[in-house]
Image 1 (cartoon, rainbow, N blue to C red):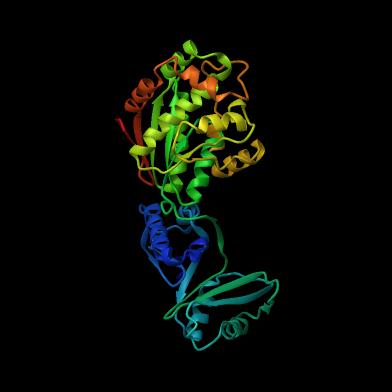
Image 2 (image 1 turned 90 degrees about the vertical axis):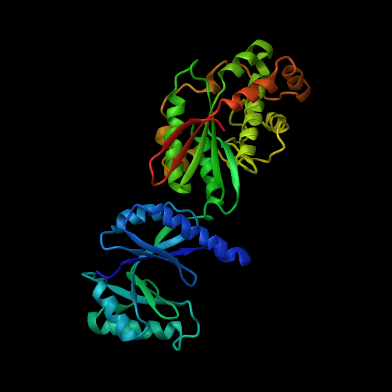
Length: 398
């Protein structure tokens, strides 16, 4: 079989004007990394598309699994390469059709180079006529069972018999860096992925209460980080010990506003970690009204502690919608494993849904939160994840 190329098409990148070459180069680089341990000979940008050249031992299914996760791709297809001589091109297509026997077919041609002597409809008629002559198939231009796609470039042509949908979005890394507060729950991994899909490289920060509670939440977040790294290829996870801060809050702060205080402390810590990584925004998985800390009143008070923008990609979604996305992403089975995270430690029975800023700031003056925040930041453990290279763990501070 001579179909040894995968042709990748992008969508939004085509609208990026002067930045387009940079976006394309980033997508090419991401594809190279994602397939670096497979038998891929090269990845190159062509006219309005990208070609992945497969080696003799390459498995289409295995490479397609990798390509399917690379953000910025509209669609891709296993393709053959032929010349612009229509007789040669038709012969190559006939050779690779194998035992297909559709009830009807059509040829669909796109010309990347408009200087070619024949128009797209003319090429469709010429190539389609040659195939019909050999196969005897019925031509159906409106609803064919098989569409043979031909892409005519300046010096060569590619053909395929179907296209796979890509994830869309922008290539990871073209929109800057953000820091996501990643719990072991359902929501925050989806929020992180949504930012990746908008071209952001996402750093993760997880707050845990080990050794007061078990380390299950940390193991869950490591697995979630590993799953998300399949999309952005390189990730950094900060594990922040939060139990001592919670102890101090319990001693000093009235129960109804503790949750808001916890969230404000988390934002302060996340901001400091974000600055060390040159991130430009914080990301959370919060949605309006989902829990007490996510009312508009409480969100407004939480936001005042940081100068960073706080991005909430899920803010208008309900739990069923978020769960569906988590299932599609593959993080849902991990997220629902029972654990003990810091959100369950020292949580009041009746948290306020409308905290007052004056009360929150007065409560914060009763304990040395700046010292506690600095201690939490300095003792944070950093773990690096890479795909397709296995996770590399290092016990270093940021």
